[in-house]
Image 1 (tube, rainbow over the protein chains, first blue to last red):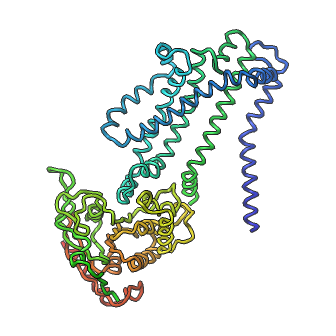
Image 2: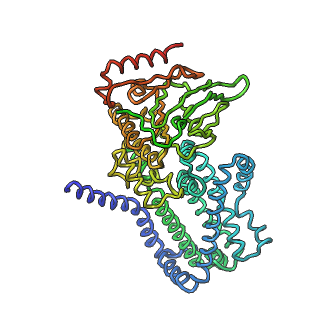
Amino acid sequence: MRSVRRSESSALTRRLRSVAIEFWLPVLIVVLWWFASARADLVFYPPLAEIVQRFGEQWLSERFFTDVVPSLRNMLVGYAFSCLVGVGMGVVVAQVRVVRHAVEPLVHFLRSIPPVALVPLAILVLGFGADMKMVIIAFSAVFSTLIATLDGVRAADPLLGEVTKVYRISGRDRLFKVTLPAAAPQILGGLQVSLQIAFVVMITSEMLASTEGIGYLTILAQQTFAITDMWAGMLLLGVLGYLFNLLFTLAERRVLRWHIGMRAQATTR
Amino acid sequence: MTEVVAEPNTPERTEQRLVVDELRKTYGAGVEAKTVLDGLSFDVRSGEFVCVVGPSGAGKTTLLKCLAGLLPPTSGTSYLDDTPIDGPPEKLALVFQEYTRSLMPWLTVAKNVTLPLVNKGVSKHEMRKRAEEALDAVGLTDVPGKYPWQLSGGMQQRVAIARALAYQPEVLLMDEPFASVDAQTRFELEDLALSVRERFGITVVLVTHDIDEAVYLADRVVVLGASPCQVREIIDVDLRGPRDQVETKAQRRFTELRSRVFELIRAR
């Protein structure tokens, strides 16, 4: 009993220590930034205190609904679409050899086109609206997920295939209870890269062709020499990027609990 | 003690549960062709425990995969209850040697055991009952919520056996099921295999390269020769009394049978 309690308290200490190790540097940088910029009189580097103030005024106002929400909506719709298509196509392509050979070179070609290079064409075909952004986000983000799913499904242990055949597990059960879980570690890796790409493409598409959104306001601020607003925009993008990644990691830890546990087991044995 | 209990109204021929008829398997073609199974024939009676023993690399696993309907033979046929096996039969389960790879690490023990029953017209209640019974039969009643990788090797193989039992097969195929566990666990699992045969009245075909194991477990031993493999001989195991790791293996007859199998395998 006592040993259980002790191990619990030591787990808490460990956790606190790891949080401390993770955060001391970012906190230090922010503090240094705050004081170093406070009295500086540089046009391009306004005081952090002002940036934070503008951040509040600019983003935590009606702008949140007219610019932040549409940006996030475009990104999430585009990302969701790329997830579905990437995983769905990956599973199908991986399992049909003929399709795989036919499709793989094309996939590798398409994914090596920088997404931003497609914006001019997208504007011509789809205009400046939200549709264009969702499409270009989805298109850019799909390949990482698609390729990761392909690899994950193909790398699955062939013995699992024999198990499903012997026990006549087929269709949806095989897909959701065997094929996808077996490939899940790779698929989630692909989904994470796709998320980062979706975020980057959301911003750049707004910077290149838009009249609303976080990216648009940030580039507009730069072009009109509203330097503090530009910094506020960059700060928001940084915070959002961090939050997306954090949420993703939490979800991944939940989905892959078995995988993490299994790996921990293997290393302690 | 080991009376064969024939069900009433059962036609004579269903005595033969599994029939292997001139089974031949060749991999590749032309000069590259390699014959692994060279016309195997034997049969397995209902409720019987048959061990197939042969040297490593003789094609025992190929044979089992043909019987499980995972691999089409090049020629010849095997029958389960007079029906030719051309795909995995409904009434057949297979326990693989590699327990760590044949269980789903993302499912708990209970979910692994019931996985083959999902969407097969088995009710939730019935599923739970079968899982409980199967886990009870393999002596694992206290781990249904654990994951396979949290268990020892021997326990994982018990889970794999429980999964096969919950599927309620008529024929249970086992591919070197105890080859990757330590000696003590191996003896326990051997006795477990005997007890589940008794409890569920299923027919068991177990492939092994271990002669002692084959003689200890089997009612009959099918001895295979080296590659390309043929049936060398089928030996009736006439040992006294219920099998016991100490008593049975001390019988003179056990030693004789063992030597006989060994000679057959070694013969060119």
